[in-house]
Image (tube, rainbow, N blue to C red; front, side, top):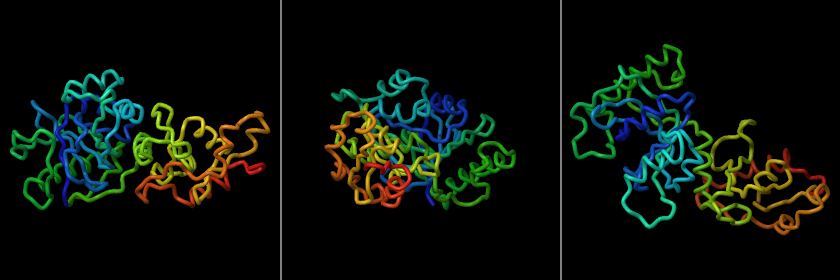
Length: 309
């Protein structure tokens, strides 16, 4: 089994380790290029601090790599990017990028779930596991001597945390090779993945003005809806509000329905009724990301106002 060890800025690590309730993080890459060719979802992803430390100080579980405009990365993850403000994040990223003509820079984002951060006394020296030429990260095999040593050291620390009953108790406690886990996706991950799945365009209108686009849950998270792309629609902000209120829905065959309640209550809505009965303007290419018919049916039956739909 493989796991990834990414070279990590100590200031990024220190900032995040001092936050409370961190359920996901954006391990960003200034260039926008992934440091690995492929990494399955759920792969252990460890943090190896840069000089002068050269130690593994924590980790998480890989969800997906995405290229995101820097403002969208901030909007999705906020402080979980490892900075207190967007301006501070720009100050960390922009000096490390090659000169570009992009008006809005795109950065690489390794999205990680269930991160864990070790106390200073628990950091793991990497010894000769990293050559001086490795600047972004490296894959290790648990069946190899070095990889096995590092993984056993990580697990021993996670096991101690689990027995102490702290917030890391859901991490694996048994010793053994690293295994793929089913990482719990957070709200930031949901927003980032849904936005890119819909090619940064509103599912209903095709609008591509990014600041007005929002990731909507078909079945709300508070009602056991998952933070998965198949439970999401990228919607213009007004359609998001109408969708949540039950004044707009999408049928299982992906047609837009608009309730007459808009006209009855507000004597308006012509811009919305023009789309009544139309098919979605944008659907994700990957079938696994497309809105699931059973979830759309749930919204039709449980949320949509059918009194005059």
